[in-house]
Image 1 (cartoon, rainbow, N blue to C red):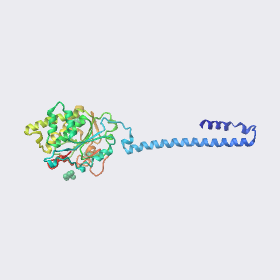
Image 2 (image 1 turned 90 degrees about the vertical axis):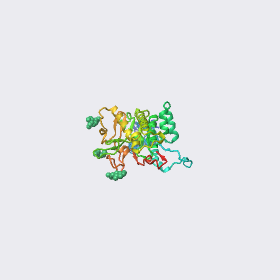
Image 3 (image 1 turned 90 degrees about the horizontal axis):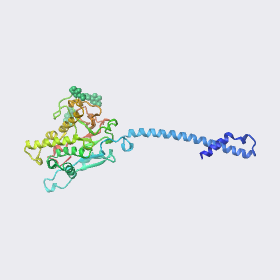
Image 4 (image 1 turned 135 degrees about the horizontal axis):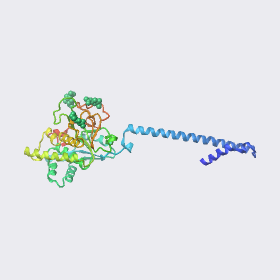
Amino acid sequence: MFRKLRRCLFDILLAPEIFYGAHTRRSNLRRYVVKVVSLIILWLLLVAAVVYYEVREEINQHSSIGLHENKNPAAIGRIQASNIPRKIWQLYLTAPGRDSSESSFKIDTKNLADTVSWLAHNLDYEYKLVGNEKYEKIVDQHFKKDPNSRAIFNTLGNYGMKSDLFRYLILFEEGGVYSDIDTINLKPVDLWIPEKYRKDARIVIGIEFDRLDGGDWSEVHPDLQFCQWTIAAAPEHPLFKDMIKHSLSDLNKYAIDHNVAFPDMKASSSEVMKLTGPAAWTDAVFKQLQHYDHELTTLRNLSGLTEPKLIGDILILPIDGFAMGQNHSNSTHDGSIPEGALVQHEFRGSWKHESKKRYIA
Ligand SMILES: *[C@@H]1O[C@H](CO)[C@@H](O)[C@H](O)[C@H]1NC(C)=O
Ligand SMILES: *[C@@H]1O[C@H](CO)[C@@H](O)[C@H](O)[C@H]1NC(C)=O
Ligand SMILES: *[C@@H]1O[C@H](CO)[C@@H](O)[C@H](O)[C@H]1NC(C)=O
């Protein structure tokens, strides 16, 4: 097709018979008309090709802008992967019934309303709602050679502590994201780590409380506390092993000091925070951070973060990352969802009322 057109074009340009010695005028005229029409078609094809390529270029530009605005990693399809496995863990332990009528398993679907946000924003992630069976399986697997620790995990009567310990264990064993069931996922996990840190970050941690220049806080760390309602991690990070080791040792000490067996341990909520919860977690995290950066001397060094900070392989998020909507710590609480917010915690804290509730997370 192209070659024919080209030959026509040459013929027209050269077209000697039009001007010199044609056989018959009519056949010359017909040939001339055919050639002119060919030339016009060729010209139109050329214009069409140019327009086609220009339009395609424009579409390409638009679609790449569109994808960035859309921020749906499934649609982008080729963002740089992080070290965080694409797994999401949530926990729903059920306490054994006190009598036979209570022992049948029942779960309130209302408690899982926020889980939809995790599923919808993270297509193709593995999602697991862990119950008692998987809990014991992971514990047995991890403590194969340590029956004492296994017994503590499995017989702890305090389900808030059980829930605390489980998150450290599952993130060590499998990695991914652990999040309490009273959290809303605001942004796809694929986008949690800024691109420049995606190669190096192996844990993502949020700040729960930052005193800044404000008043004292009644909890253990008056300056700053990390949250553990949501944590993202690559598997086998030593931080979790360290955290578990310290918690188990403190629990043993508590049991001895209070002369109480693990199934009967009824620690107050502030004791839970210190033994297995955010206060203990803050100690473990800060110790690891100091191991990476010897210049860190106080938690106040991390106060007032306005953008994510990578220390070693740990990414610390500013307050809005996991803790927007609080009326302290410079957390955004004007009803808007700030750009840097990845998770919203609803503070249902069901484990704090565990004497009244059978189902906790
Ligand atoms: C942490 O704060 C202390 C005391 O203000 C300061 O001497 C030190 O340089 C700070 N470290 C970092 C890494 O900012
Ligand atoms: C509070 O956060 C805003 C927005 O990130 C920042 O501009 C401001 O400096 C922060 N204030 C304090 C006291 O850290
Ligand atoms: C902050 O919020 C808590 C409950 O979320 C409330 O009890 C307290 O009064 C609030 N404080 C201020 C200063 O608004």
